[in-house]
Length: 386
Ligand code: AHR
Image 1 (cartoon, helix red, strand yellow):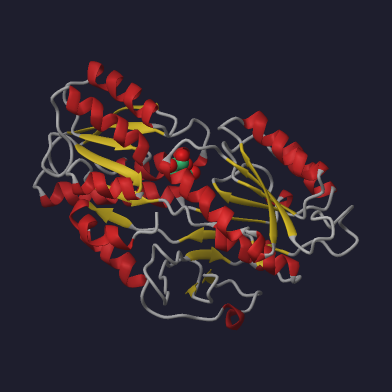
Image 2: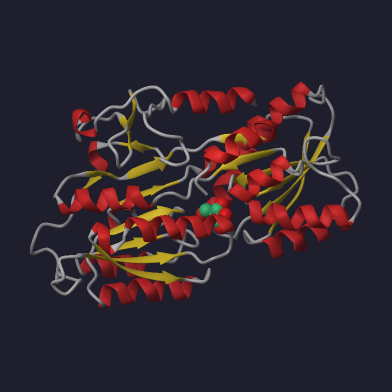
């Protein structure tokens, strides 16, 4: 577990490589931060990251998969049916359809976008909080198209349901950048995607558990595991589940008792935990697919006279690694928090600048993320940016 954490941190401190030096047409995997820090992966299979600069939280880094067949340029002048969405103000007009305000993580994500797309940075931002409702989000994107914005940024609530509106954006010549969660639509319908590797997050969480049980001499004990899932159909939930279960299937003593959606909210975490406690009296591990769900579940456990965390009855694994998640680790309630990086704003803005300049951009780029066990929380919390 410590190994995972320190490997990641070490990987973040090695070296900076200027993006221009890497070129756009090779198959290397590239990491680029807005201040010029870069990460490369020689063959697209290893995951060695390099970064210079400040703490990994204040200056987020990302990995990106470069594939010559998967690069995107802004449509050539004239391909766009209309332009100048900012009505001659000189600002680049960006429409951003945000998921909602379901969690602390989401507020940090929205804030990152708002800061990146400020007027001072040369943007006019049309921001829509889509309240976790697909219909609202599709309508928001359609309105951006009707308003002739220059770029659309979409954080898809769920994976399916965007094909038609993306076709409309393409017909209008408006590039769409998908961020955070994944989408099932054909890749030709959007310019690029930047966000979290949710499957990897699930793998990291499960690998931490493997090591933790080993350390405690519990690796040949039957371990009952329940999971409070995120929003049904959201890639943040399906990816984490897929990754965790990929590792779990090779653990003969792990019993995946149950998984139910808590919709990435504290209220959802509370409701599902109550159900789990009624149904199961021997839970060893609780996985919450975000911090807010964990906060709800912790309250329910405490009300029931149970404890969780490193010294508690139940091992609690959470995702996001928000400031409040760190505080819950310091309070002794969460064992490990697997990071989901919300600081995507500067990277999305960087992509838009490249598209504006007619440069090719990588189709898929992952944000760099870490794994934070409770014993590291006190030391690391002061350097966290969210
Ligand atoms: O898509 C990112 C996930 O969505 C975060 O884990 C969660 O907090 C948010 O609701």
